[in-house]
Length: 183
Length: 173
Image (cartoon, rainbow over all chains, first blue to last red; front, side):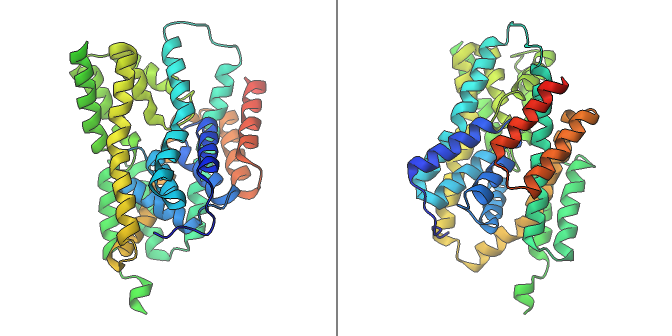
């Protein structure tokens, strides 16, 4: 893992992750991270992001937090990882703590339900966009596409357990011949 | 109460270390532990906690804060969050350090590359699974489609797209 050409300061890193954490409504935090880090800031390339997400899924723990740690590492080493993970969690933690305190009672605002539904749908759209953009950028051959679609269908259609699908399909993927090796 | 805190730490730390593929895979097991095994909250409260947590930004796994809160108040909430997030984060730090040292080795590069198609398949599967609970009618379907199109084909900043979605939700109810 080499440090990329663009090296934001720790302060810029903290601010960016704080912002992504604060605006990542709808549950699609990895989508928010990709859009912000790869497209808006260009701190990570598509390849680096996909590598980070792969490692994040293979290591236990919430993907988005693992991914923040990876991005922080790449941009500013161990300190960057700590700052990124803390910053991305700060506002959501405060928000959910507030919700926990208010759980017992409190009347809902008249339009709040509509806004929340919209933000949930927004999160889904963003997640789908991230997956499709990554798929396009990855330039997979037919076998890789079969593996991607297979993993998708196993979880989304057959409701198979994610860890089994992750490691089972990764093992299949490791066994298949690769272009780099064939050449 | 301190006994409950220890239980919360134990349950969530163990779960954290088995959350391969992300936090969402744990939800059924969290429900089993919190409702059936430990009786920290009722099944109805569990569903409610999950729904409430969707209103917040951040990782959906943060809803363990609400479970811990119901079990033992603010200390329970803190214990649940620490136990759920710290072990995995420490492992990920270790993985990044290992990647920094050995990432150039062909074996490591091939292993990470092997996960790529699966990783993307799982992101799309997450979207499909999330869609089942969030895309419930034509309006939410339209917002999801517009969000996907806006994020894919325009350079509009994400917070602007988010505000547009929120405004649409406000106006359409």
